[in-house]
Image 1 (cartoon, rainbow over the protein chains, first blue to last red):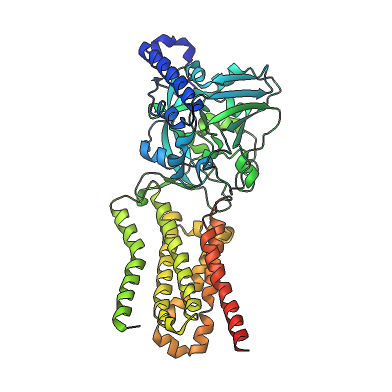
Image 2: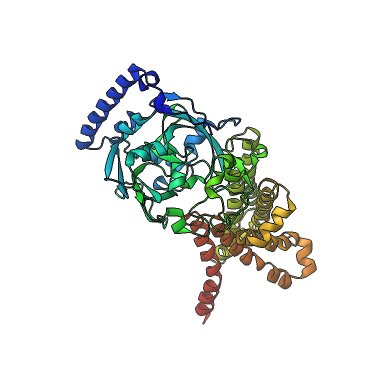
Length: 319
Length: 201
């Protein structure tokens, strides 16, 4: 597979000077609103400073071609993000309260030494790439999303995991003091997801900061999330605050809630039914009802790239 | 109740019952059914069915509160038939948009998935009631037999509620409201007749 080595491109060529200056401006406005927060409730202004922030990107050979993009409106108003309500349209309303700056990401577990990354440092770690991916929800609907980010493997290298690290766990933001915190869902917070190390290191696994040329809207998992395009959407943890390297398979939220419905792997697989519906077909979001039907592809159409990760495994058993 | 007021009320109930299907049709034509039109149609028709069943089930207990409310009986058949109408649309949505008229998919679903079984059972329980809803059928069957058959609506409502719970994800509580309403209305029947028999003694 052709993988461009982004380190060959001088970062000065990718990120124009005014963007650096902009970043400084954002940083200072972030500091300003942080002060505002201390003075009493400036969460909304903190959000406004970053919503719709334009991101400088480069092209990627790992992008998916030949698919019509789902509209920005549908991608940002049809969300599963239970921290902000169980209805599809609720996250777009309530995730406004997500405090995306300041934001730090902890790295723990089987690493050389525990680390903390600031979100603005993560944004500059590698050139941000445009990656169009198919996004298949376990609920049998699908989208095509133009994400922005770089391979998670680039970040993992910075974390210096030990050879005993076999799995990566992602923990999402949670705050039970948050006024709309959902009570009766049966979920053990924080939201937890995980990947096997080789899955996490696969170049398609995207450390994601934006979509449609802009910083991630809060309801889509701002300020940083993972996107694993060959797995059902819930595997792609949103609004990550901690990454843990483990020598054992982590407990993951939906698997914990209903292990017969949501496997640890949860690879997109038309041959393995969900107990309540077939996964052979999917409904593409944003089309008239008579045009929605699509045949679901094995590993969401990424089998050529990632199929070898599962060689010799029984995917009906390890679904 | 005056005849003219009754007619006015019937017209209003007709409008209310036809509103969801009119909205669905209009939104389908203008492509404004939301991001997932198939899901919108499925949920709208399903919710209408179970809520119309609940409203219909409220008629007998409410009527028995006072003799002055006896006119409510004139709305029971109408509501029941509309519940069947939306249940049929819901089933048709499944057949056309979810299963895509594919027989093997439907057989697979019916044999493997309990929420599909419960939903189909609810519709099949409503079917004979819709068929025997005419005055002619009531005369032909005789009131007692007819009333006994139409007790199946209790089972249909329960099957509908079970179908709703089995269809949603763990953690989702949207079926809770209609479930409470249906259970209260079903429990009201034996409770009210017990209360009445006690009052007479």
